[in-house]
Length: 232
Image 1 (cartoon, rainbow, N blue to C red):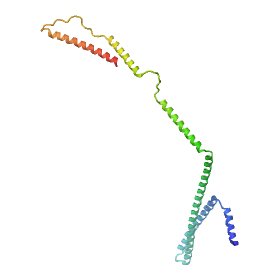
Image 2 (image 1 turned 135 degrees about the vertical axis):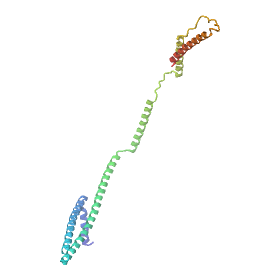
Image 3 (image 1 turned 180 degrees about the horizontal axis):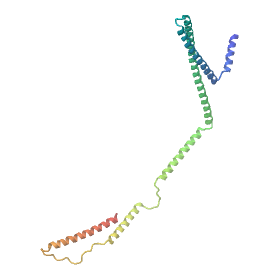
Image 4 (image 1 turned 90 degrees about the vertical axis):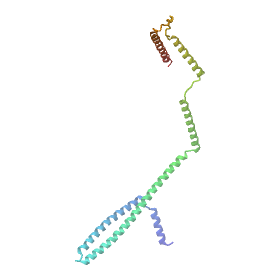
């Protein structure tokens, strides 16, 4: 290898060792953009002045007008080159920003992966399975307890419910019989029935019998109403 190749190789290695940080590179690119933007503004002003000179001289001094137009063309060419340079710098800056962002993301993800690894080193899958089984069993027990509390409580007293209902019906029937005995029945006349009246007085006796029957029916209705009210 020639001395020149060794020189370039040594220069590249030294540059690689002294590579700037992304922040420094981004700051340099922004400074370059600002400088080129200022030069753009200067060239645009110069172009406007040269164009004004060309218009001013016009037909009076064609040589001066032509010189002004030539300078204007050179300035426009420089402006076009600066536009291209600024576009390239913007592209490089955006790419560097994206690379820096990706680097930070990758670094943070690696940091998080190390933290997860450190946490998982203290975990045993078998212990986790046992723990989940214990949790499931305790949940089942708690569910059974809740269901037991929610069910109707029945104490074993040794009595048959059907027999108790039958006894209750007997007591109710006895009470009903007592009430029926204590109820006042309508008075039955003890005297003999009057003799059959003659045909002339048949109408008054018929009226009397109908009134007596209505009175007895009214009394019987009252008795039945009292009996129904007691039963309900």
